[in-house]
Image (cartoon, protein in one colour):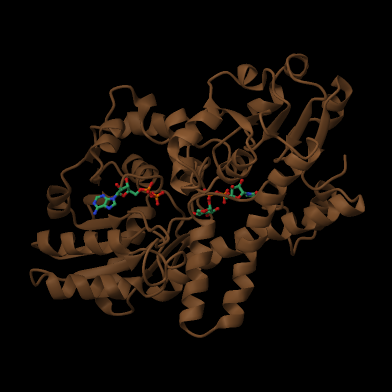
Length: 465
Ligand code: UDX
Ligand code: ADP
């Protein structure tokens, strides 16, 4: 089937950028992104394209070009479903916070609601594409809902996991390492797969478009994220050993990364990984393994999370210990709040956990992040439910000037690796801080010798400087 009308349910960090690229690369396809969240849709439609709800380098330009031509953002979910030949499901699948599988399994409630809505609206055959990361065999559940509650029309379910990383989403979408499409092995399944292959083939070389069965595709996504997170936890485990032995984790990473079997990427030691995917997907993997009685498999992967939690906690504890065992009433300046640079996404950001720890120690925290606003910082802390909201508000102060944030501080902590942090006038920051002036570089991005020459006491992850 030649696709000319696509709808995407969910205008988030995956749905928004993905659809913007499809619209740009396929001018013959009408792409409508729908969401229940009217505020989010209004932001996507904001006259000033710089105000779209997601910050990604290059994204606003793309949206500005395609919006109103063949890219539309709307809250009219039913209408978009009705008109589309192909429907991408790109809604959130958070970790369950209640009941069976609480704290581990993926909550499929939003997926199920989507499936029911598609079933009730569809009056002709449709291809439904899972874009959200899902547990293995979710396609089966979606199919069962569609077939049992629908209007007798036929659905083909495809799994097409998205591998884009935030901060580089546009580049990752334009030149993906691979596009993965899982579908049924029946002739109808193959037809559906081909329809989606043809969409991507508008800009992705065919040899990079991989087709598999549905289950392999679903599991590949979880596996890729688990492997990536495991690399970060592995280098972070070594960082602690480096600090004890006098080795330097950056040197170790360079040395092992030159082994072509290991490769240089994803070996940056840090305050701990964050983001909406790694922890959620590993917990999900662990839950699935346990549900099949594979306890050794589950224990193996859970260790990646244990290490990551340890890394965040020990970064915070080290600040307290270094500041003479107390931060009570002291000002700690946070540079960065997002879970990585070049995004405004803060989900599971290490900054949230480090600040929670320090607030428990009665620190006063001042935060600057180039893309994160106060409302989000407070929402992130309130979500933890560690203390009443008014105490979070009292303990944390978000400002839009990094120099003000650092003024009078006892210590500066780098939580996100934004490039601009390197370029700051560190002499000016030093002059306005309490002495001794400490810097805790949770991302190893600063020029330690330069800062030390100014007078700072610098502590970086994974080295004794
Ligand atoms: C990840 C996967 O990379 C992507 O393929 C998938 O689609 C979604 O999940 P994302 O979470 O956007 O993408 O960012 P990623 O670049 O993977 O970083 C995740 C976290 O790991 C960040 O907090 C980052 O700072 C941290 N990280 C990454 C490190 O600490 N060290 C590294 O070497 C790499
Ligand atoms: P991701 O990072 O995976 O893209 P987000 O949480 O950023 O996830 O986005 C998911 C979006 O899906 C949210 O904006 C949410 O409002 C939307 N959503 C969830 N369920 C539905 C639904 N049934 N219909 C329309 N939109 C939905």
